[in-house]
Image (cartoon, rainbow, N blue to C red; front, side, top):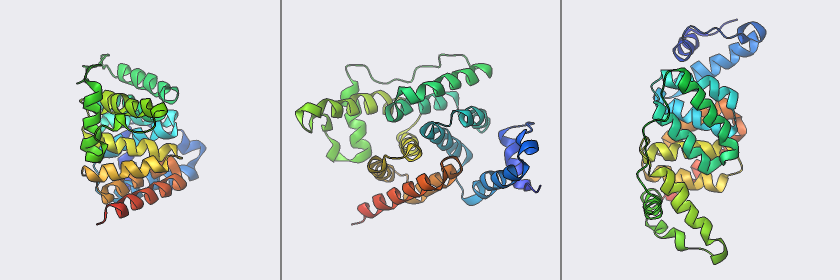
Length: 253
């Protein structure tokens, strides 16, 4: 078995002192997977470890990789992702995945943080009230997607207008207005939620454009896709790349 030195070193940084049982039960698979995920992929670009780990946590939420999430969350914390950032990733996932899929991850995050001595609940990060969330949420939509989103909550057929209102006050007003992550980080994790769950290509293209508009350019999004590929495989990664290319083409004058 020939695991590269770079892969061994990165694995040790993620999981200090840990020896995987798969080295004994599945040595050929681990050789190829670890060399790919922890050497070839990691060294493909210059994405910093914190951004990589936040993207991976969001991707694992999106693809429902609960066991791998439990394994990778301690690694993310070892690489400097803060408990507040972890919780904000999980909380925001509720808007894009639904609580039915997020609940096990919230419990896992609580268990792991508590085991590491983190006292819960964490300091509050909300900046809105039930009275201000709609206006603030719509402003967040405008900040990210442009002036065309102004008063989006009042648009659309009357019978479904309440959903546009919920997008403004709940999705954006309850989550995007929180402290702990900035707009660029929040749009990046949203991109990961959508790419990883699949079947959301229209929304993924829209959020790829939103990412680009606030500074997460095409090159950055390709780095994110590349780092998440080992966790979601090639089909969803290639679909995400297509959405990024479509969003970039739409931005050309």
